[in-house]
Image (cartoon, rainbow, N blue to C red; front, top):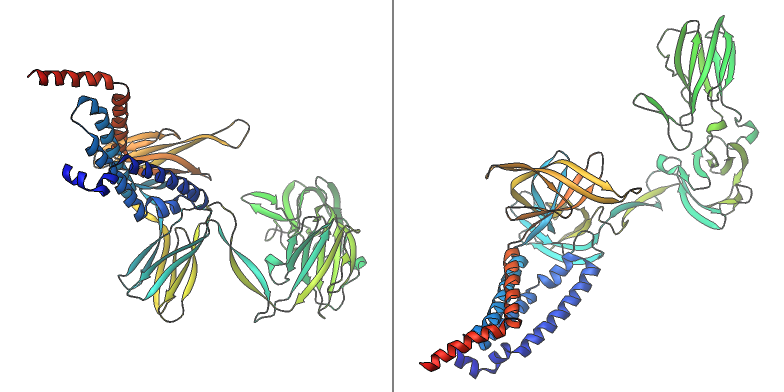
Length: 584
């Protein structure tokens, strides 16, 4: 062995300190580049490009060979070399630990809602798995980025050989959403206008569609804009439109006798109707009436369901009632014994008006008109012409119809809403050897089925599931906030561990800085998901290289102490041994 070393310059260079320095400088460059890649593209991508790449294996192998060769070259069976030998043994064990961690370490996340039990976790390494229905063919394509990565473009492929289909992952969005885009055309009549609203130096564009409820009304900030179809050739004059205070009109059944009361919260009135005396108290008026449980509520938004709640007392009988503007025949007394009155709520705006409103009227003759209500009061009215701006709020707001369409269609496009991993999704293409392919957005954790080249393929984007030999149940989650703020100061999970194999069953508290370590698994308190009940998020790690790495660092530390602080003391033992050998 010594002769082979002395006769080979290549082996001498591999074992030399010069090669060690070269490897260390190269490692520094690699780590710097890896840091940049991780900051730009995420942890998963740096794992794929650097730490788990095949070339990095060769680099670690070269480092190991250099260290072993240097140890063989320089080590002598003397006490003074003890520190040198222990240090190199420690480095070698660290490399073994790094190898085990790199190839066999499993990391992931476990989410546990309060009261739920989990006996598995999902790995951090994600895959898009394609399964051909009615076949045993299956393919897993690695997603080379982690959820929440800033990288969008990627290119990862795999092939279903029996089916002759290539699976391509080409785009990643951490927060996928589909936005509707309106486009002229379509098979059915669906009128719409495109408009521009100018207010105080700023402009906003929008669409209005009278036959699509979600698109018939838009809140533009200073005023609400809505559109309606009018079955007439001209718009009635504003003087003919109903305005004024809101009132309840009480009538006696079968007679023309009536009594009107202004609908104002807290108002009381007494009157005679049909030979009976009535006392009425207005309890509350609503612009947009709704019921949640047993309580009445006034929903935010425009006055779509005006109503008034009141109490009627006649003789010794007192009962609550409600009258609706748009449903005059319905009340709390519906179907009960006739109490001698009927109530009709006439809603004209009043104190329940929707602030400032612009209404676009699509007339029967395809012409347009507009009317306005400013803070509950009647405003301007008149015709609308395409391309001509009209003043709708005393010179502060102008409204322009840019285009009018008889037919309008929808087209949905995928967009990324933010850089937060709220809805991580992969764009997957399926390309057959012949015929038409398919493309689909695949959200994390969901399964989609696609038919390509006559084959049905189920696709799922998720991490690999790992079963545990025990289970954890979240019994309680605590969150403490900084005083006077909504920021979390600390949070912790109280879990109940059950292990059928060992018989262990106990409650354990997992803190942010106090993980649970059990049977080779480490559970860190990572984050949580708020809601009606909390869901804890635990980071899970199982690293077989952890203890070899710790032992290696310990040995390396001992070796350095022996080399730099106890070298002279060890040298004395060598001197004594040499004297004894010479004396013989």
